Length: 173
Image (cartoon, rainbow, N blue to C red):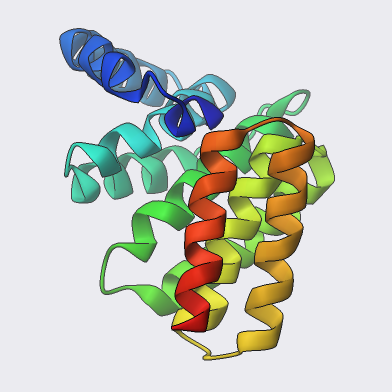
């Protein structure tokens, strides 16, 4: 989530690297136990770890696996939205950009339903970037990224806001 867009990202990455075997074991156990909500929440939280550590294929595999688990109902919307938004950013880095677009639409819809501002900003970032990168639809991409920026700034997520500004600047190049 938003912690990846902060000044202490490197410290968080080091902490997760030290605990990665335990986190991996937890994901295996949660998946085998069909604990969809917790598995999706954990995998969604690890998405940017996988990206920043170059483990995109592993992350894509886990995120897809946990999203296939049957939902347990109450509280599952936020966990599912988190995993979908994480998968958007992972798939964006692969050659599967058409799949990423479908995931981005589902992730954005899910993020809007749960109303979690940081998650919504990340979903809009992913969808906006793909709208520009794949569809070459500058005006829609710009609108999505501006909406993401407004949400990130309102939530005081300055690191995320900086990334969104960087993407907006790239649209102009």
